[in-house]
Length: 276
Figure: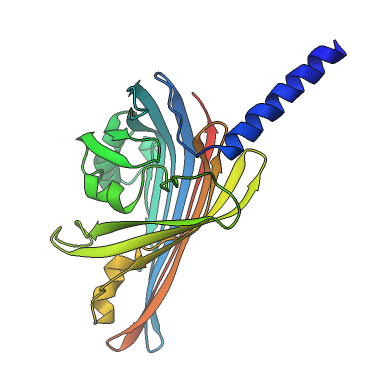
């Protein structure tokens, strides 16, 4: 029995060391379901003189990714839906507007009409390669366009072409398209996200992320819509399982506009909670 236990432990250690030494990749299996819990809190404020106008928003969701198919090159077709959604926004008037998929009867009627059909239904079907790049958006509800996944990868990062180790850095160049309500869809900006591997501990690699937008508008007020597209933070990737484990992304920007100051703060977290 002791020999069996020892052999099993050695097998686990060998698999872990292989995972760490190999080129990192998302690993998909047909029929697999990945579930993530997300929370996004934002505060947007405008201060002029002694007056402050502030809007707070809190969004919580249970996101479900189902692997529909995996081809011979490792490219997977995934379908995303929401198992649960909570949305609350508090405008400057101070009267909160709420949608809660668990208590529809307690939701603000306008928000219930807008969001109830987004829960429990497929929202997008995408093809994703082993690096995490969305190659194609096959089907999508409003808000889940190819431009969205160009700016914001489905699993928050693109993996490098070599094994992860502390100090390794890489980047991806892409284009930001400001779609409604942030823009008209015609505004396009070159951007780059830079990644640095901070640590590899066991099967988990911790990666730091920063975002830079190039050629931003000269007027500060025209830069405000781009703030939401410039996160920085940390991403944890499970090397052995080949999946996103956790992401914590932040934005904290302010600018002087006309006769006042505007400030935007965002904290986004996404945590893997199991296969269901």
